[in-house]
View: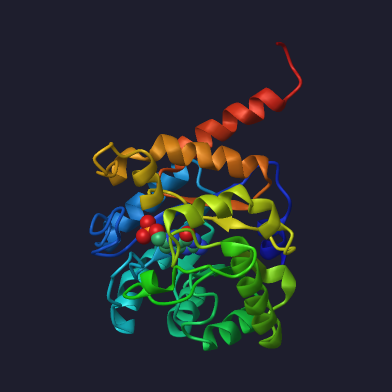
Length: 286
Ligand code: PMM
């Protein structure tokens, strides 16, 4: 599959995956792009800002969120994927459901981004295997309504060892379902059954995750561990829309460590910063 080889080919900088949340309740931008025409326009803006991939999702995974019906999720994402894929965009579908993945691939998506890594709906692995699409498998322990209860990493090696072991187990399940290793991208799942210190630890040891042998995608954008870092002394977090400089610093950190992609809401900020780094690494007048 030529498109897959191209998508996963080594590149000097991380791919920028722009987020299009077609949801009423995502923590970062819930409700802003719920109408298909608004979501499509937002996708076009992200492409103009330099997005390599658009990640289109119809289910909010914020802590405590309840799940939409499958029909609702399909109704949100399919029209948006159809329109943007027809315009030539590389489209990823952010879903945990086999049925939604199948419909999204039929509508033109070429990447399945499953935050549950196949745990929420194991049939999704068969759908991915049959399609040959790229598959982002994120580290995950439980649905959003009770994932906080699972943010415990007491074993030897702490959160980094646990995430590596649990992702390795998922890779085995993918292989058993017929997914080729070349299709698989791994993601440490920042904020999913993780407290702030777990997220920092994973970012600090990102090379250990790379040593699992698959490209890595990381999503730090707008998450609460950044809000907490930047918050005031009274414990009030920095608001969601004022965490972008911090996220850009994370993009640069991840670029230095050779990650395959970063999942961001503000594509332009990360793209501009990466452009500066690229320019500085070129030969030329000093
Ligand atoms: N985070 C969110 C949603 N989908 N997918 C991947 N692969 N990695 C992530 O970290 C991730 C994700 C939650 O953020 P949002 O509600 O702002 O989209």
